[in-house]
Length: 163
Image (cartoon, rainbow, N blue to C red; front, side, top):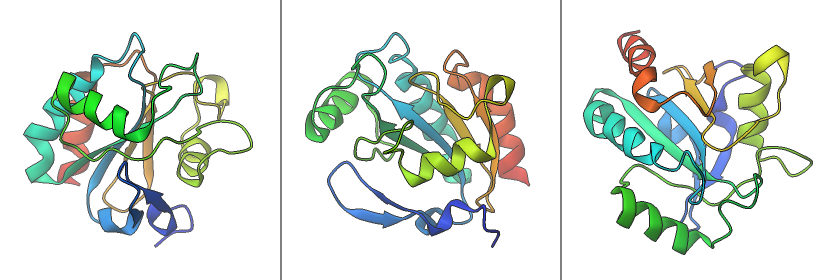
């Protein structure tokens, strides 16, 4: 396992339980910083479609709420969980709210950003619904901007599932 693998990082799910990322070893991951009150919030629907259709082939979609962009996810974890479930039927794993930029950046996002830089080499996450594709080996494959709809990533995900 490479030093740049996400598997040494621990995350906390939306119910407060700690999980090592190694729980997802061998899976293709689509990791997304989400928000409940954002123009991109309807992307939950597309993320759920990908999860429904590709989970049995080895895809996990992992949602990480973030309140760093115009306070678009101000609620507590329970409220966020209910919102995602009731409004978008989200059944993929959701995690506790994280910071994706700044001094309190979650270690997972620090690694994702360093391995898949954004526009013009920037590491900073620019907005909600930035997506990171991670291969079965735990290596970051690619970053997608918030404007990229989940369905547009399907081909890349399927390539990783076959790898």
